[in-house]
Amino acid sequence: MMFFEFDIYNIVSSLLISMLIQAVFFTIAYANKTDKVTDFSYSLSFISMTAFFTVTNKAYNPIQLIMATFIILWGLRLGAYLLTRIIRIGKDKRFDDKRENFIRFLGFWILQASAVWLVMMPSVVFLTRPAPESIGVFTIVGIVFWILGFIIEVISDHQKFQFKSKGENDGRWIEEGLWKYSRHPNYFGETILWWALFIMAIPSLNAWLYLTVIGPIFITLLLLFVSGIPLLEKSAEKQYGLNPEYQDYKRRTSIFVLLPPQKKVIHD
Image (cartoon, rainbow, N blue to C red; front, side, top):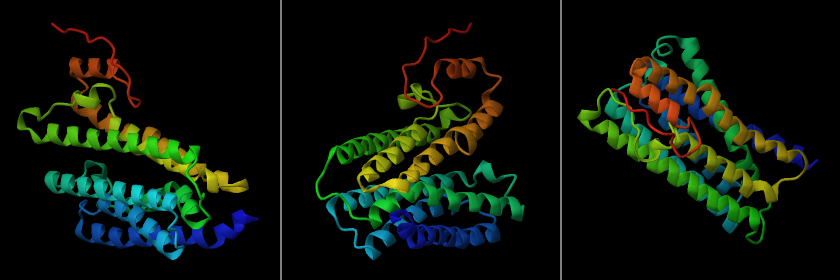
């Protein structure tokens, strides 16, 4: 019964907030044929939803504030990074076949709004229900893994940004730092931190509310099989696929999880 008491207002309102923000920025992006607001709007949606539910539900329990701080910190950092990157490179190749097509471009924005809504579900539940009075095992584990995931994502993004900023690396792929152990360490870090937030929310869940595990499952599947890794792997294969050194990097480097690389093959 509690599930439906929660659902009626909070799940619907969280969907509306996400859709409204994406609708505004879709209009700007389509009218100006620009990619500069796309990823920024993604981060802004998480920040806005977190602030809204924290304030309207007076979610001022210390553990709730920790979760809210985590999401806002992540959103601010990612939004600033992605905005800086798109300003530098000018456009996002993901949208070359969508930018001029209203339906296809709109479809992406609807997917993005839905993604924010689903991924935020555990956190929305946690911010709108009575929180634990004391820090328990789930809270500690969630905090530790969130910090770990955040650090991995930040370091990965920084390393790649620095690598791409050097002219001598034009036409090259990064295989240094954390990218030596994973071809997509930033996505690995992001997946960890969203699972960590779900773990933090577990003490506030009961009955059907455990179905909010769809949030971290969705972001994991999205990055692994839909709009994250597959698109980047396809782009990299198109750009570097004929290079035997790149094929060797692929062979010896984990696609997702940070793992020790296999032995490098020496090419003549």
